Image 1 (tube, rainbow, N blue to C red):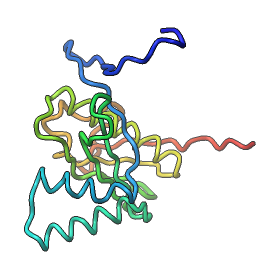
Image 2 (tube, rainbow, N blue to C red):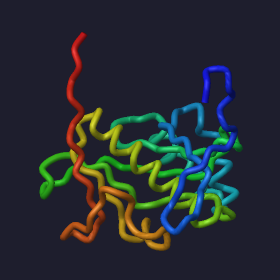
Image 3 (cartoon, rainbow, N blue to C red):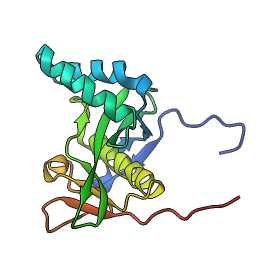
Image 4 (cartoon, helix red, strand yellow):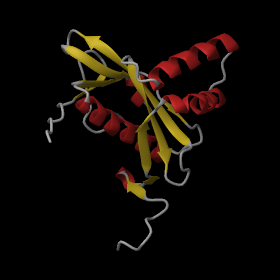
Length: 178
C-alpha cells in the first residue's frame, strides 16, 4: 500500500479454522462514554430502575478510572465508534500473587455478533488490558472461567491458574527517560 492509497475500510483478522473476523479497535473508556454505554447495556440487558441506577453508578466509577478499575470498549472499523463489546476490569489485591491483579469477571458483547467477531473482540480487549497493566505496574491479569466459556477458550497468553481463574503474567513495561 502506498502513502496515497486509502486504508481498507474494513480490515480483517484471520482466525483459526480459516474464519475471518472484522478488525477490532479497543480503547479505555472515559467519563464521556457513560451515557452511551449505559444506554447500550440497557438495550442488551434491561434492569428494573433501582438495579439500572446501581449499574450506572458502577459503570461511572470504572469509566472515571478511579483506581478501582477500568472499562475497555471494543468497536469495529465499519461501525466507527459503535460499541461491539465492553470488558469491565476491577483491580483487586491478591495475597497469592503479591500485588494488584486486573480481574475481569464479566463480558458484554452485542448479541448478534458471530463467534469469530466475539473472539476477536475478547482477544483485542485482553491484549489492551495487558498493555495497560504493564504500563501501570499491574503484574497479573485474571479472567473468570465463565467469561471465556463459549469463546473458544482463553485468549493467547492466559493459562489456567490453581485458583480456577485464567491467569496471565504481565511483565512491567520498561521506563523510558527523555
